[in-house]
Image (cartoon, rainbow over all chains, first blue to last red; front, side, top):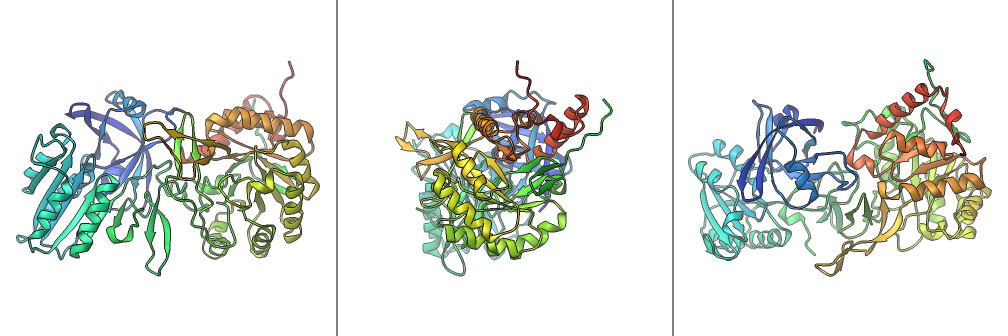
Length: 267
Length: 308
């Protein structure tokens, strides 16, 4: 797949929650080719510290307008530099990168499971998936966060007609507990389902196990430190089981970030 | 002004179209960047270090960002020399860019076996001996920090291939100059210095090392002054030996500094991750500098530091 290195123009920093923003960037080649689950590597300024670009999942993309957006929370030097970019200035953007979610067309229910900051790629997936659903296919969104003000994407999913279930660690909204409990409950219902998940690795590990136990196809988007994002440095190693037997390290940035859950070996 | 500078450089028997290469491990096997970078314009591509059998590498986390740098402990993950020769090399050589195969091993026999396979292949311009990887349990850097062992592996590889031989040195040697001299004595055509510096990073909140292997190799802008110091010292001691400078280059100016300190050529490592087209910009920047300052070749600028 063709990747593009572009100077993306800042269109807007849209405040979504305290300290959390949707950054809208104008970069037609990326906006026109990005698929849900893919990401971009951003560099607000050519600094030596921070040195690396940072990966951001694409939250939405509008090919007609040539814009795409990512979600960021201001915490640390890099995101401060990003937040200070004025409208009309440019950010170096490399993308679209990595693998993407592939809707399971035999499923009658598509369950998108987000934990922590994992919602953005699932919002993009839902936006592309919803218009293609048959009348007997349903869209579910299960989201978990530490507190209610950290929940992302609830309104978007409701607007798409999804069944939304919420879990917070402190019980400030919805079920008090983990989003993986909500998934267990949802899978009690005997509907042919497919699961698409993004969130912290411990959550993905549980999601993978729950799905395996019930024979539910599951795709997960994993997180790993990523110096390059383009498959060169081998820093973002993910241990996988090979179809021919044995194990190997695959790259979260190239073969991933979206993997079939049964492929990934958790340690 | 008005000079069209000659960017060609010769490192002994190895002639390159310009002095800017991409470093081992920082450009994959060579093809990974082809949709983003016109790789035919590079001075040379040094491949990821190749070993006799595929290597899985170290467990994650393998990389961590540090101030103006990064630590890596990849552990030489690669698909093995045979996969490179069969699957990558035929495509890579169609670009016409000089290809330098970096080789690594745990024993002298592994180095020579890999070198002889590369010697039989078509389209490789030179071999770079990685005697300096800090991320191997055995071999690698062990060979590069002791003069007798360095001489032993270099002369064995020298007999396994007729290709120009570059030896990449570790900055961990007690006396880098004596290692450098031993490598040249044993048949190295050129030296590349330096590889990464060993380092650790700690997560105080979790009270853990940030790398699974604890120790990794430091690279990036943070190491430039010490890498340049090592290059300059070796150049002073061995002024006739072609040297390749590597460590922290992230602009044309950085590359010019290495040339002024005595480097025949340079390699760009970590910066490729952040700025994939940097090598091409460095080539252009060197061309502009030579032209603006009236130097007709890279050779004319080399070592041209004013003393006072």
